[in-house]
Length: 434
Ligand code: ADP
Image 1 (tube, rainbow, N blue to C red):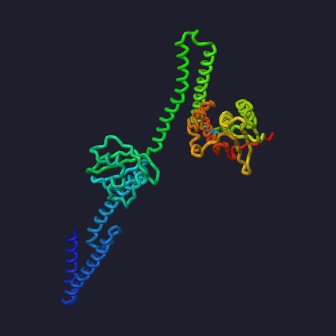
Image 2: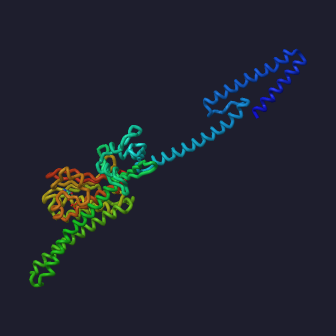
């Protein structure tokens, strides 16, 4: 096609030259085609230089009207455009995959056959303390040095994940790690932070052990008395002693009942939705708690009551009763005879409501205070049992506080006394206008 076009042009200019030679002089006849060929040469060179310039950056549109070069440039440009579209699609797909891997809640590290880091996602950086691109090419086993993990990584295969304790920025975290092989002997490491699950599992195990232990003690006592009564002939046990045994058995049964009731309260608090916005008449509620506390004290303590009669709360009456009574009965139980118990129910300048129980009791050493709201935590186990405690009262109180957006405050000094307070936000306060 190109050849044919060139031949036609040559023939045309030769014919024009012959005609010019005939009409004018032969010199003119030669000059015309020579000039024409020269012009063609110049134009072709000019086109070639335009094509060469375009070839430096073929992503731009190719030059138009470049004669024979059109046949080269146009298909080349079409091919380049198709390639760049394919490249863009592959790039987008890769970016999508990387974004997906970054969004994974698990850590992912790709490693070569020497366990050198190739790439890792953000979660893996957080879990294992890796930094990219700084750690690219570093050996993973030099960076994650836990002996358990090193032994695991060096084993022949990894059918099961492993739990590894890692210390990251001063915090100990438990990671579940799983290695896998892929591609050309490359390795993939997946890490999952199971610290919270481990903690929950430990709490659950401790809780089951604690409940069993708490119930086993009274049950052992109860069984012991029952066996004695069963095995001894009826007339071998004097009536007075029998009465005493029955009294002790009743006491143990009551203790088990108290534990079970507190456990049920806790489980209800944990499983039911938060406290609703019903208005709770606090002066009535406190009046009932006062009667109970004074009955429990039986005149052994001096009470002082500072109650704002018009101050009510939005919340759940039975939950609040349990929290208010727990703090009050604890003050009675842990304050020796003759001690003072002051109770306050008032608001402050910011409109927050405060329930405060102040006693001059045995007090609590500072190291115990953060743990008092743990289930079954007692400062003095024997003393708590002796006064009929279950070790669950403050755990219940803390739960109730949280469900009412309140905080439980504890201040105490051994030998001097304690102040327990429930501080409710102003949004929970309701003023009795009647
Ligand atoms: P318990 O049923 O044993 O009283 P709580 O959860 O109510 O369980 O309290 C946990 C522990 O906190 C108690 O065993 C006791 O050691 C301590 N405690 C609670 N209230 C007081 C208080 N007012 N004075 C001194 N110690 C207290």
